Image 1 (cartoon, each protein chain N blue to C red):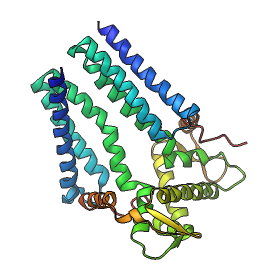
Image 2: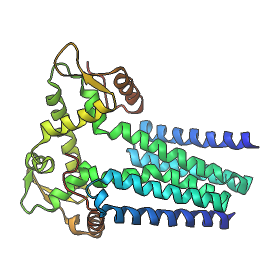
Image 3: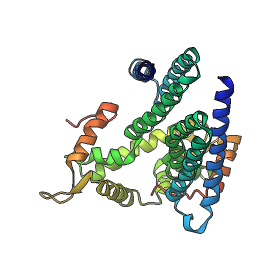
Image 4: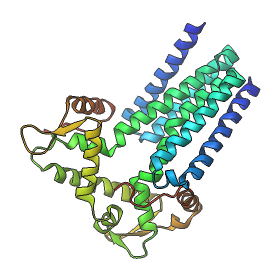
Length: 167
Length: 159
């Protein structure tokens, strides 16, 4: 049993190493340069393909390893997204590369490159529109939530008490 | 036998969720701490079950791991997503223009994160200003920096 577990874990570690190496190599290949999402999808697809081949060739140990690789997908994505799009990581990099003290407003301006208001909100709204969670309002100028968006908001309240309903 | 194994897997997931609820609501632990504690309890339970039932049950801890990581992903998406915050603010703050409401929320969030970096030693505060902390050049910072270079992480991708 212990041998089986060690065998399975070794396989997963090996696939993990391939995944990280693929991320590092693909990052610098021309079709993937400056496209972190594309890099991650290609790398995770490669890892899943390798795991599937291992599962077919090795039997139960391979299938269990495939299960662990599937379990590792969200962890890999979370790490990758924190590295590339993480707000706190960006804040930390700004403060580390600055020699003069910054007040909160200056720090925020450096992090958002002065585009906080327009750019970020616009960027998020486009994403929400693409996923059909918001639409342009028919009655008043501006945006409104779709039925799907309203359902998601209700669901999010079940997960967290951080979003209180406005009085 | 398969039904018993599936039942035990479901039980492991229920125990995990119960641990999260206790840690979150009663002990007021943060997200990562409560999730890690629940993962440990679930893994000990499902691993123990597999040890008792034999190698045919090894899929139970594996199944639990799959469940735990995907639920962590969904929960953290619901709790931390900026897009979701925009969605919630849309229509919830009728007395304020939408962008102003969001800007107010983001300033609070920014202050929280600044304090988090300060308490971790990556930044330090002098009066109302922040500057580089003692840990900015520590080993963890070096490792992070290597990762940034290796994966060509660009500053300001978020915006």
